[in-house]
Length: 154
Image 1 (cartoon, one colour):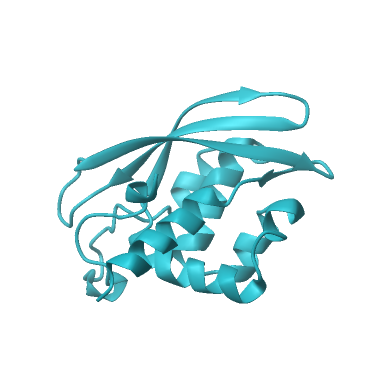
Image 2: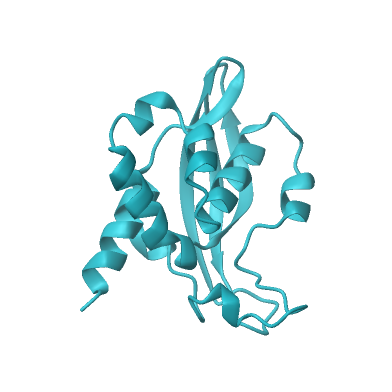
């Protein structure tokens, strides 16, 4: 699944000219279009936190049991590695239980200046309900993506 991380085009967010949309980024309109308190909303908020290298946001949106699997330094390093290349999730469907949810997404990658994705990779993301909030329960996408990116560096 690590190939799902890489967005096509430039890794440099600063290279996007003002007013030119970077379609790989989850924006506030994407988040606002999904009902608050749902697993789908958590998925979008989590992806945005990763894309913006927001370690605190990722921690708030991830279940404590998942966070225990990584040291704080490793989490920060993995987020930093993946942030510039994180694809944009498009929710396809969900399965919902009282304490677990599975959200199926297509991880979309766009090239600059194109409205249609050049890559769409399916993934299923598992969330858990903790104290009434849906949280990401598996960091495999982040960990595997960081590993692949770091292995590709000379």
